[in-house]
Amino acid sequence: MEYKVLDQISNEIKLNKKVALATITRAEGSTPRKEGSVMGIKEDGSIFGTIGGGNLELVVIEHAKKCIENKESKSFNFKLTDDKGSLHMQCGGEADVFIKVFNRLDKLFIIGGGHISLELYKLGKMLDFYTIIVEDREEFCNINRFPNADELKVGNIHEILDKYEIDDSSYIVIVTRGHKQDEISLKSVINTEAKYIGMIGSKNKTEYIMNNLKTEGISQKKLDEVYAPIGINLGGQTPEEIAFSIMSEILVKKNKGSLDHLKDIKK
Picture 1 (cartoon, rainbow, N blue to C red):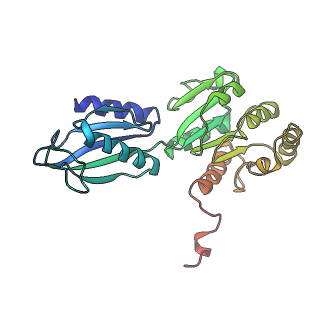
Picture 2 (tube, one colour; picture 1 turned 30 degrees about the horizontal axis):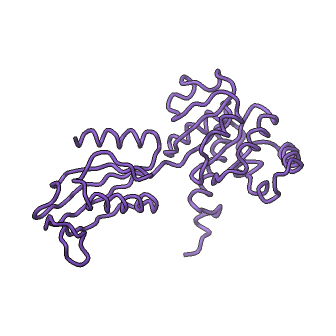
C-alpha cells in the first residue's frame, strides 16, 4: 500500500502539482493504524492511501489543506479519546502525524525557441524552474532541441497561452522571432497573475507594441508592469549573456533582491 502512495506522490510532483504526504510517526495505545502508515492529500482535499479513516483522517486532511495553502510542513499530535480537546474518538490512543508538503516549482514560460530561448532554458533548468517552451514552429520546439524541458507546447501561441493556468508562480519571457508574435504573446498574458512578464526588443519596438496594446484597451498600469526592454544592463551581447541578464532580472523579482553591490550594502 505505502509504495502506491509514494508512486502517486511522485506522479503529482512530476506534474508540478501541490501535494502533501501525511505519515503517522508515533502511535501509542489503540489507534486506527500504526507507525509508518501514509496518506497522500491533494490541494482539493482528495486523498490516496489511508491512515485509518474516521475522525483522525478527516482532521488530518483539513490540516494538510492548510499546510499546502501555507506552503509549510508540520507535525501534529492527536488524542483519540473523548476528552476535552481530543478528537472525540473511542480508540483511546494517541498519534503523531507529520505532514510533508511538496510545493509546486516556479514556472518559467519561454515564448519562442530561438538562440536566447535555448540559453534561458539551460539556466531555468539549472535554477530548478518548471520550464515550458511555447512556439508555433515545431523545428524550434522539440525534444531534441530542449531535451529536459518539462513541457513543449507547439501551435498557435495565443491559444496555448489562453488555455494555460498562469498564476503568481509564473515567470514569462517573450522572445519570439518578431514583433508581431511578441505583441500577440504579450496581449495573451498581460492580464494574468504572472509574477514577472518580460519582452525582448529595443525601446522603439517595445514602445510601438505598448502603444498598440494601449489602443486596444490594455491599462497603462498593466503596461508599466512589463519588463521591456527586458533584462539587466550587464553589457553583454551574446545569446548566453543576454539570457543571463534576463534570468538575473527574474531572480531579483523572485527573491526580492536588489541591484546593489554587496560590498556597498551597509550592515
